[in-house]
Amino acid sequence: MSDGDLVSRKNDHLDIVLDPHRTPSPSGNQFARYQLEHCALPELNLDAVDLSTRFLGRTLRAPLLISSMTGGAARAEGINRHLAEAAQALGIALAIGSQRVAVQSGIDHGLTRELRSLAPDVPLLANIGAAQLADGSGTDWARRTVEMIGADALIIHLNPLQEAVQGGGDRDWRRVLEAIGAVVQRCQVPVVVKEVGAGISAAVARSLVEVGVSVIDVAGAGGTSWAQVEAERALSEADRQVAMAFADWGIPTTQAIVQVRQALPATPLIASGGIRNGVDAAKAIRLGADMVGQAAAVLHSATRSTEAVIAHFEVLIRQLRIACFCTGSADLAALRRAPLSLDGVPLSGPA
Image (cartoon, rainbow, N blue to C red; front, side):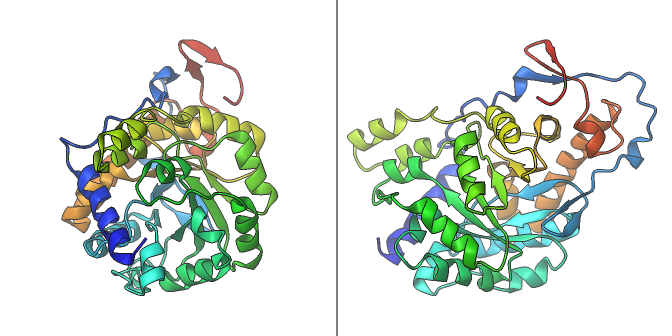
């Protein structure tokens, strides 16, 4: 696929996700099935609730990651600048969208070390697609993406369903796990592997950790459905029908969190995929996540200004703090022990 085609595809993705009339309805993330037990006597000072955490060697003021959402299109430069400035102001982590176009074409569209200068104190994560790593140039691509922005870690994203239903998508996924392992061995920073909205199973997560991956982002079903996005882009009715059959495909975010945490109790885990608000974030942490990511929900704010992004996440942080307060949780460690029920049935111990 040519550089121009790749940029055009990225612009299409932005247009579809930003258009309320074209944005697909996400499949259920199943957070509504879980209920944190209300504590009517928290014995806490709300303002003293501690949301801080450590991630990639840095201290964050809240366990939040601005998830990968855009890369390659010229207008992404302004979006990423707003996100970097907001991440620094809020003390939260930032993951960049795919850097494939920048690496392949040499046109950086703002994906430079300027982002590091805008966000010097928070984790900054580079991003490349797994399918691009298996052709023999994977380790070089990985090195260049990290160096390009001065990243603290490298995200390798898995998107086999999206690639399968999009025109010109990468069809050959043989030896991808081997390629990821090779990148891990040669990369100078920790490697994070994430899905893009269809979830990671316990078996796949375990295989990734076995080749040295440091962090798993489950990115489950419940947020943006990229099959539905590609259906919007389809050039024929047949292609649209193929993509739409997979509109609800994937492992729901809550299910992925629980299963991966049970399989890998010591592996840092990011929960993303349909996180609507701070209550969902609190439930994700209680279910086993260390960090919570959000992408599409903040994209509209990111197109406007840094201040809009800050305002968006300040609301989410207030919601998360109140969820801790109303479960009697003074900090995130206490939240992970808060009483929780599934479909009205109390759960004992970890979910």
